[in-house]
Length: 110
Image 1: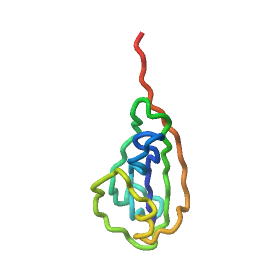
Image 2: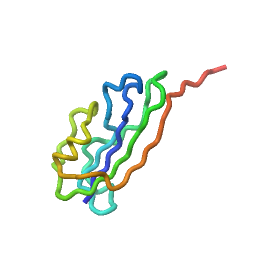
Image 3: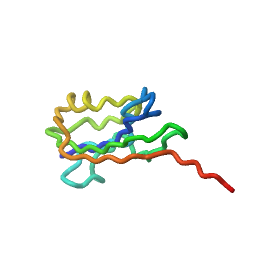
């Protein structure tokens, strides 16, 4: 079983990340490599950095689960405490991960 999540480490901006670790996706109890069969506690929400907030770092982390995690939906996405969630659920360190950066873009009409 596995757990997968995506967070924004720079919400709402890199200069003032008071919503740090904004949760964009959380799936737990993934059987093998079948993400679609896991329990989605926070549905995927694509990146949307506010205009002028600079680059945002998004992390996708994969943890190996030792036991099932309660499939209770998340009430809040802001200030998701990754280390506390991992500790409470006996997850240990991530086994895989990746990240990407996103900037806001406002197109100008000529």
